[in-house]
Length: 166
Image: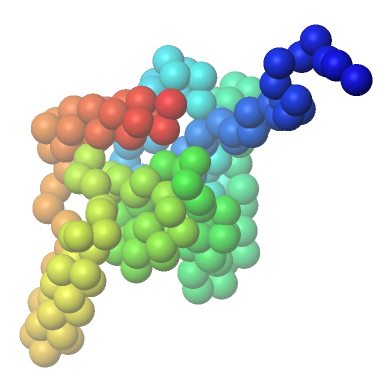
């Protein structure tokens, strides 16, 4: 018995890859407008996760998930959904760590990426600063004010991350 097919193995179609998506820790995110701009240009879905409602564009690429107001409910939802085809936007260092472990690309609101190499130092610094604040009764802290350069750096970082995910 002869065959006209020189390759007797069946052709298997390439695996269907999930499109990338952007998961946003949205409650205090100062770069939502920038996220929308990049998402529209790249045709990438955005999921805004929060404990409360806020204004958002009526667009098929943009969806909202409202979680309970229990501690870390938004973080838990995002961490469970994060994966290799996700870009997570957050300023929360512990959430960034969880998402990196799930294989996601993680970018801070200021455009600085969280990486496997940098997350350990960020967690340690966070702990040290929390201890210092606790010992300085009444003296607060927090991130530096959001600057125009942060917005620009964020736009570039998000665009680059989506290009890498293809």
